Picture (cartoon, rainbow, N blue to C red):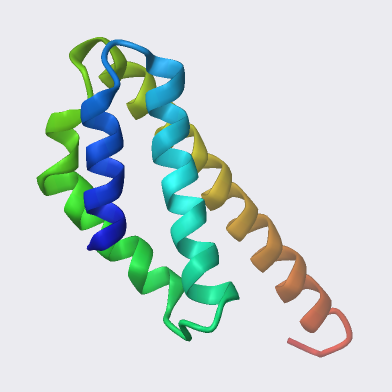
Length: 104
């Protein structure tokens, strides 16, 4: 929740600069994941990102300027597309290796 408040504050200080607004949202997500998983906080990075996403959906979305909302939506849509593609490719490769020698 603290990360959501910080990202929302940053977004409220930026006006009609879609490059910076996109970078703040991406940087905030990556920084939150790193802080929760890579430091001595010993928290779940995935659950922290879910909480950030819920906070941004409820409160943070109103802080993104109207001119930048389209760009932010498209960048996060592309990030989601790439993530889904990587997951399906990796699962296909792993399943192909696993069942290569079996009689399945």
